[in-house]
Length: 456
Image (cartoon, rainbow, N blue to C red; front, side, top):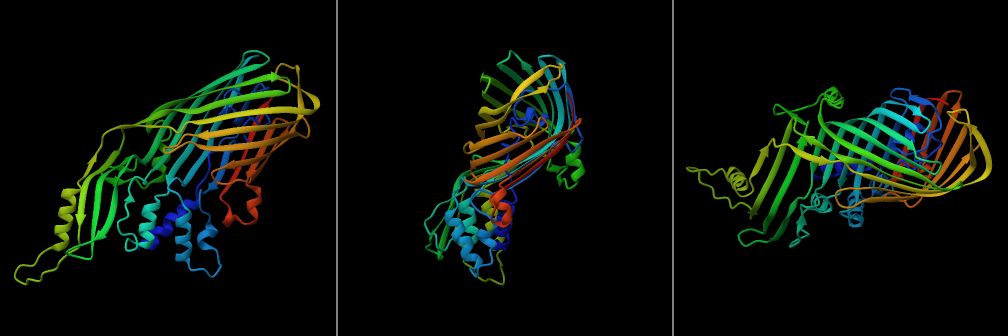
């Protein structure tokens, strides 16, 4: 049974994703770049995205392990592979999942300097750190780890299913500076999280039996909202979807950013996203466990006239020494804030294109730059550094190539293409291209695509 549990944990780890969208950031004046920096420059009158198709992304990734580490056909016993993998893992390795689907996206120009954008998107965001001690205990047992303290504090995870209604403003202050902000109303249908746990599990040689087990200084918590209703688990997917449309637990957040031209060819930009929170008060069920427990096995004494319920006594002692409590107290959960910053140098052939006010804007066909990304997570920020090259083939066709170093890979090569066909804009982006030769050995994969209608 413990092997089955372990394999489930491993499989869930390799079906995960990264949140960074380094190809999309500041690329080809796509409307979706406004979600990564509300101060991205726009040169069109208005736009709208094709519902449910304007922003679709599929991402997978895993920090620390890949499928071939465990399931490669190489005549090595799978138990040996798991043991080897556990020795290489760190308790700071993690599995992530983040996915966004735009339901609605639009925008319009209120005047020559101000562009207003709005929309609604669905998001699933999850992170779970590998509880290395727990995985080792499940896989190898405690016989070989006498006097070792297995830490409970490594249990750290969070899952959110939510919708976000947003409106943003991009304001061109002058020819050099553009600033922007976005206000969001979150509606969460599901939250599951646990953090700041303490406690240890230790096995030592016993006196009355072979081993003696200690659960010491245990203080654990698990918070949920939307998972349980009227003491029954919610298993209807449509209920979760419905509650993302302003029917769930509400919260608010903001995005802010700027774009600044140091000179006509050198540009710096930055943004901070999802600085906000969600207040959970609907269908809340929290569980806590606090205390100590000592167990030294069972010394059976057979008495036909007065049989003893040994397992019942153990359960009673456990509940008394390590009591579990449930409550429905409301709580606040902060959104994972994100930071982007980029420096871009433009060069090559100088061209002109028509803007929203029937004037012409000069631009360069080529650009080189570097981008820094960070998302703030429970243990520490997760960073990504990207070098990129942009090439405008024509005034309507643009490409971007990236090389990214992050927690998943030191050699992530990506590419993106944006094409304007009349009023119709099509874009597609793919990450970690080299790993498509063998997907089972990939640490991360990413695919993004969308369709917009843009009026210049």
